[in-house]
Image (cartoon, rainbow, N blue to C red):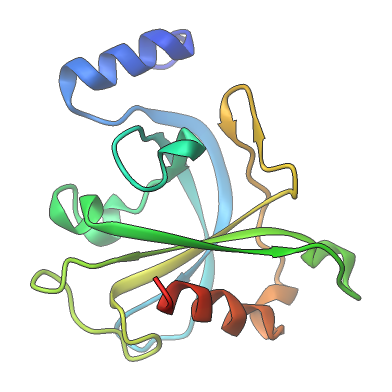
Length: 157
């Protein structure tokens, strides 16, 4: 469905029941449930209008890790805004997702959530007319205390 205007993409998504995959991709942080080290990876985004993150219009496509059904549909989101930081590349909004499909995924050895957790970054202004504008998560984020702060926000959900 590439090349169609955004309104037609949303109509196709609604009629087919399949989220539209966008051609944007960005680097997110994946925190694997199996206890392997958190790492950065590139994910494309898909359009969303049916969940807690619909205000973003499109989100990273976690379906490879959570499945296309309940694992993906039963998700929650939290965010942390970093306005001032000694490392300017860390300034922005960090959005974190977890699944609460407890019967479908193993409990994470890192986070206590079920399944993998993911973190994406946007600039402080966050959206344009097409929804969320993403930036790559900087490598420095992995060693910063911001990672624990974002996960704390996600635990509070």
